[in-house]
Image 1 (tube, rainbow, N blue to C red):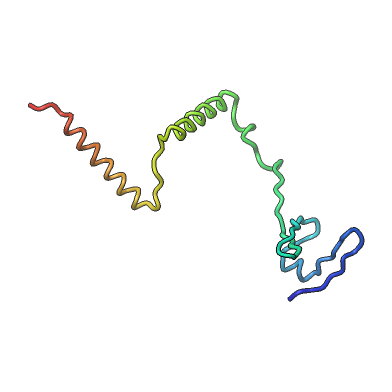
Image 2 (image 1 turned 90 degrees about the horizontal axis):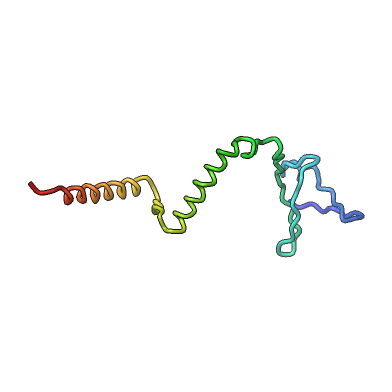
Length: 116
């Protein structure tokens, strides 16, 4: 059900109370305004106060950060060089691949044993 509202000076529009309630909007909330297919669309937006959450800068010493950065650099190098495992669609696919790799490793070890 739509409602007609009047555009005031400076483009202000009052959103009727029942629409605000349906959208979960309260005084001070933010909305994103967009124009889509000839319609003005208002989308409620949540804002997070990042100052209430700790940052990684507060959690690690410079020495720990250096170790982390080195490990991330090594991981990036591995990815660029193609030294990564493939992705699996589920746990069963992973287990089947794991068993296949174990069988290959077992066969390789048997072939390396010296003959008596």
